[in-house]
Length: 61
Image 1 (cartoon, rainbow, N blue to C red):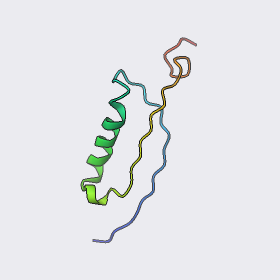
Image 2 (image 1 turned 90 degrees about the vertical axis):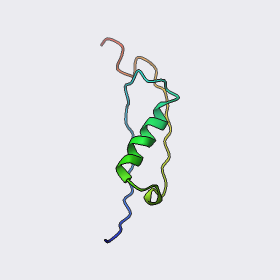
Image 3 (image 1 turned 180 degrees about the vertical axis):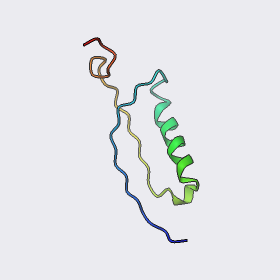
Image 4 (image 1 turned 45 degrees about the vertical axis):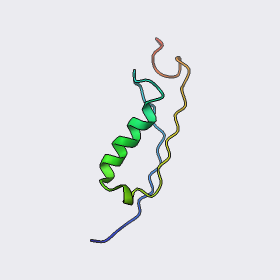
């Protein structure tokens, strides 16, 4: 089987009632499930920045 390196960059707004401290671990788990083998996961960094409520989509327009 031929191997390839894929570099993926994304900035995503996540709307969730989950405790913000748990979100990075949840995201890591979901991405790691897709990769199937942790040996193939060369680098993964997840940073979470909480937005003000009026930018997070919860305030009426």
